[in-house]
Amino acid sequence: MRADARQLTVYVVEDSEILTKLLVSMLRTDLGVAVVGNSGDAPVAIDDLARLQPDVVIVDLVLRTGNGFEVLTAARSASPATTPVVLTNHSTSTYREAAHQLGVAPEHYFDKTEQIGAMCALIRSMANARHAP
Image 1 (tube, rainbow, N blue to C red):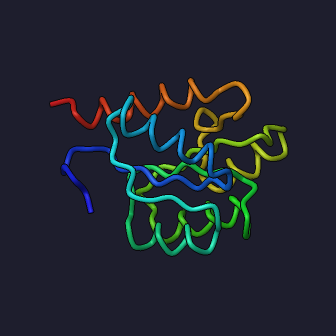
Image 2 (cartoon, one colour):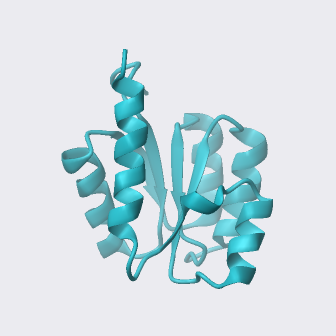
Protein backbone atom coordinates (compact mmCIF):
# COMPACT_ATOMS: atom_id res chain seq x y z
CA MET A 1 0.00 0.00 0.00
CA ARG A 2 3.01 2.27 0.34
CA ALA A 3 3.51 4.51 -2.67
CA ASP A 4 7.17 4.96 -1.82
CA ALA A 5 9.06 2.78 0.65
CA ARG A 6 10.48 5.90 2.28
CA GLN A 7 7.26 7.93 2.29
CA LEU A 8 5.58 8.31 5.69
CA THR A 9 2.17 6.61 5.79
CA VAL A 10 -0.64 8.08 7.90
CA TYR A 11 -4.15 6.92 8.84
CA VAL A 12 -6.67 9.49 10.16
CA VAL A 13 -9.34 8.60 12.75
CA GLU A 14 -11.71 11.58 12.94
CA ASP A 15 -15.51 11.80 13.07
CA SER A 16 -15.85 15.26 11.51
CA GLU A 17 -16.01 14.90 7.72
CA ILE A 18 -14.94 18.52 7.24
CA LEU A 19 -11.89 18.18 9.49
CA THR A 20 -11.02 14.82 7.91
CA LYS A 21 -11.01 16.39 4.44
CA LEU A 22 -8.89 19.29 5.70
CA LEU A 23 -6.39 16.99 7.45
CA VAL A 24 -6.08 14.61 4.50
CA SER A 25 -5.53 17.54 2.14
CA MET A 26 -2.90 19.13 4.40
CA LEU A 27 -1.11 15.84 4.97
CA ARG A 28 -0.95 14.97 1.28
CA THR A 29 -0.36 18.41 -0.20
CA ASP A 30 1.52 20.43 2.41
CA LEU A 31 3.37 17.65 4.22
CA GLY A 32 3.85 15.15 1.40
CA VAL A 33 2.82 12.05 3.30
CA ALA A 34 0.77 9.13 2.01
CA VAL A 35 -2.65 9.03 3.67
CA VAL A 36 -3.53 5.33 3.47
CA GLY A 37 -7.02 5.63 4.93
CA ASN A 38 -9.42 7.31 7.31
CA SER A 39 -12.51 6.55 9.35
CA GLY A 40 -14.78 8.16 11.92
CA ASP A 41 -15.73 4.82 13.44
CA ALA A 42 -13.54 2.88 15.87
CA PRO A 43 -14.36 -0.63 14.56
CA VAL A 44 -13.52 0.32 10.96
CA ALA A 45 -10.34 2.12 12.03
CA ILE A 46 -9.24 -0.85 14.13
CA ASP A 47 -9.68 -3.26 11.21
CA ASP A 48 -7.92 -0.87 8.81
CA LEU A 49 -4.96 -0.30 11.14
CA ALA A 50 -4.37 -4.03 11.56
CA ARG A 51 -4.43 -4.48 7.79
CA LEU A 52 -2.59 -1.33 6.66
CA GLN A 53 0.05 -0.99 9.42
CA PRO A 54 0.65 2.77 8.83
CA ASP A 55 3.66 4.60 10.25
CA VAL A 56 1.40 7.09 12.08
CA VAL A 57 -2.22 7.11 13.21
CA ILE A 58 -3.87 10.44 14.08
CA VAL A 59 -6.74 9.75 16.49
CA ASP A 60 -9.62 11.86 17.76
CA LEU A 61 -10.97 10.57 21.08
CA VAL A 62 -14.68 11.08 20.30
CA LEU A 63 -15.93 9.13 17.29
CA ARG A 64 -19.26 8.26 15.64
CA THR A 65 -18.99 4.67 16.85
CA GLY A 66 -16.70 3.70 19.68
CA ASN A 67 -13.91 6.01 20.84
CA GLY A 68 -10.29 6.84 20.26
CA PHE A 69 -9.13 4.96 23.35
CA GLU A 70 -10.42 1.74 21.77
CA VAL A 71 -8.45 2.58 18.62
CA LEU A 72 -5.28 3.34 20.61
CA THR A 73 -5.62 0.07 22.55
CA ALA A 74 -6.11 -2.01 19.42
CA ALA A 75 -3.36 -0.22 17.49
CA ARG A 76 -0.91 -0.82 20.32
CA SER A 77 -1.32 -4.59 20.00
CA ALA A 78 -2.11 -5.03 16.27
CA SER A 79 0.31 -2.45 14.92
CA PRO A 80 3.00 -1.78 17.56
CA ALA A 81 5.31 0.02 15.10
CA THR A 82 2.60 2.62 14.38
CA THR A 83 3.19 5.93 16.16
CA PRO A 84 -0.03 7.21 17.77
CA VAL A 85 -0.85 10.93 17.66
CA VAL A 86 -3.94 12.34 19.37
CA LEU A 87 -5.78 15.37 17.97
CA THR A 88 -8.85 16.13 20.08
CA ASN A 89 -10.96 18.76 21.80
CA HIS A 90 -10.49 16.86 25.06
CA SER A 91 -7.17 17.99 26.45
CA THR A 92 -7.63 17.70 30.20
CA SER A 93 -4.95 15.99 32.23
CA THR A 94 -7.23 12.96 32.73
CA TYR A 95 -7.54 12.39 28.99
CA ARG A 96 -3.85 13.08 28.42
CA GLU A 97 -2.84 10.58 31.11
CA ALA A 98 -5.20 7.90 29.76
CA ALA A 99 -3.72 8.37 26.26
CA HIS A 100 -0.20 8.27 27.68
CA GLN A 101 -1.00 4.92 29.37
CA LEU A 102 -1.93 3.63 25.90
CA GLY A 103 1.39 4.63 24.37
CA VAL A 104 0.85 8.23 23.29
CA ALA A 105 3.93 10.34 24.01
CA PRO A 106 3.04 13.61 25.79
CA GLU A 107 4.47 15.58 22.86
CA HIS A 108 2.14 13.66 20.49
CA TYR A 109 -1.09 14.91 22.16
CA PHE A 110 -2.67 17.98 20.53
CA ASP A 111 -5.72 20.17 21.16
CA LYS A 112 -7.77 20.67 17.96
CA THR A 113 -8.72 24.22 18.86
CA GLU A 114 -5.20 25.59 18.94
CA GLN A 115 -2.55 23.00 18.06
CA ILE A 116 -3.26 21.69 14.54
CA GLY A 117 -0.21 23.62 13.29
CA ALA A 118 1.98 22.03 15.97
CA MET A 119 0.68 18.58 15.02
CA CYS A 120 1.48 19.30 11.36
CA ALA A 121 4.98 20.37 12.37
CA LEU A 122 5.43 17.02 14.15
CA ILE A 123 4.23 15.07 11.10
CA ARG A 124 6.49 17.16 8.85
CA SER A 125 9.52 16.38 11.03
CA MET A 126 8.63 12.67 10.96
CA ALA A 127 8.30 12.77 7.16
CA ASN A 128 11.57 14.66 6.80
CA ALA A 129 13.35 12.14 9.02
CA ARG A 130 12.01 9.40 6.75
CA HIS A 131 13.55 11.13 3.70
CA ALA A 132 16.91 11.79 5.36
CA PRO A 133 19.77 9.67 4.01
